[in-house]
Length: 124
Image (cartoon, rainbow, N blue to C red; front, top):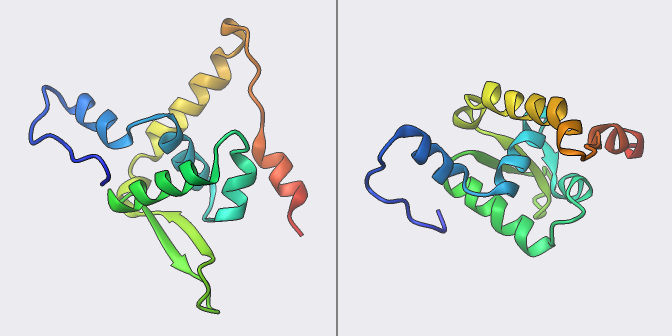
């Protein structure tokens, strides 16, 4: 991991949040929970995130054992990113975070999109 974790935490929640560390990691995990994706698909889903930060977050998630990268058959650098078994064990948590955001957005006077609908329309 880019940021080395402390050797102890006051509680398990503190540890979990340290591993997930930051808005973009959790969002990336939520997207990969839907299905494995290529970098370009993640890029379309995260237009406000720079290439540099997306690459850094993917590396951090791979380093922490939450995301795996499978290279394409052609051996190029492209391939797909997917959740590892460890990350899949976060499935319920990620689902509840999504549902909470969906159900409470109006209370905070914000709109939330449905990025997979657009992504699926753009797929060949």
